[in-house]
Length: 180
Image (cartoon, rainbow, N blue to C red; front, side, top):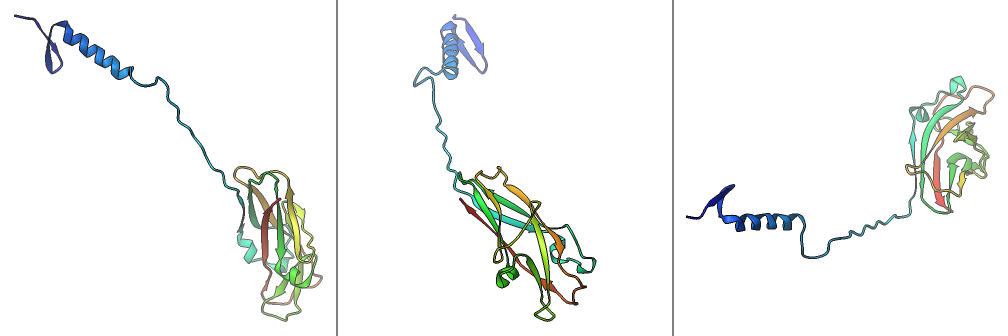
């Protein structure tokens, strides 16, 4: 009677079956058909990004003029551009634009139309001077960093000699980014 070998859940006769099982296991680990190398091509598309956003602080909508505030953080601007030629950022004051002014102006929203309070802001630490209500605040030949460039907008000072008349005052700042 031939000798049977126990292999897991089945029996094999002789060593031929055992060698066959070892050979099939080797095929599973080292296939003998096809190539012995393979490639995977990767590609990506990077669209042009030119974007700007601003996050206002609580102080932007509740400036207390009675203390003649200085160096108040109004907002954080995020500049994003991957333009290989760089980019420019402009800020426009709605009231300075309407009046052709060189500085921003808070205009009375509840009092007399002639009630204005001149003010100056800084953008990334540099004082902003408008020309017909618009100022270039960033001009770079580089791309922005991976997460974008962060800039602070601060109310530098107000330009009044006497206490302002009671009421609500306002202005709107618009930030625009363009690739070079």
